[in-house]
Amino acid sequence: MSTTQRRHEVRVFPAGAAERQGARAGVASRTVVMVIDAAYAAGLVAVGYAVWAGVRLLRGPRRFAWPEIGLEVIVTVALLVAVSILASAWSSTGRSPGARLMGLRVIGPGGTPPGFVRSLLRALTCVMFPIGLFWSAFSARNASLQDLVFSTIVVYDWHERTPAPAG
Image 1: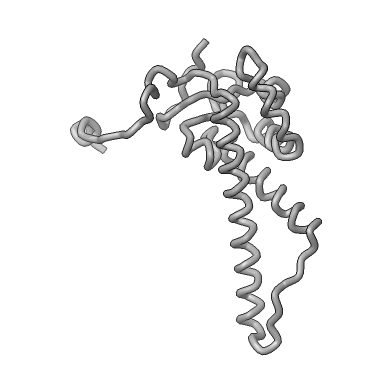
Image 2: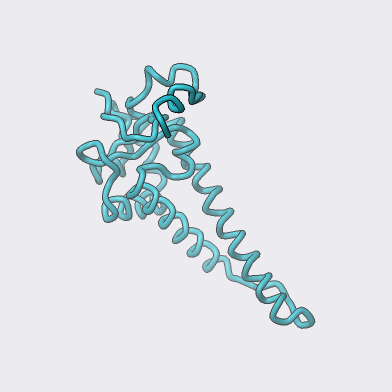
């Protein structure tokens, strides 16, 4: 994209976004992100089930029956999908699907996206212990328990590059 084209590009940011850019995200924004990411993971699991049922239908339409799956399997698959989504998103861009919608980014030490191992461990603890998020409501630094354990920060970020954390 040329410089001329970039000057005419229009971006829409929420009111007050410029002042919040790089500031630590609060518990409300983080909770919305968590709900969006959970819905995204559940949607992927539902699509996977539908594809599996579709393949079974195509293989034998006369003897087709909806696949029966135990609750333990569904929960396990959903948790694995959620961990995979979060770990891959955080380690690459620092943004999960929900964080992209809400203008948030997870950054590690040095202001860059956390590496894969840190992101994977953080994702595991976020999925298995989501209540740790709410520590950010009581933390002076808006840090969840996962942020404290894995040295991460969640910041407001409406741009494509990673901002330096404020404060």
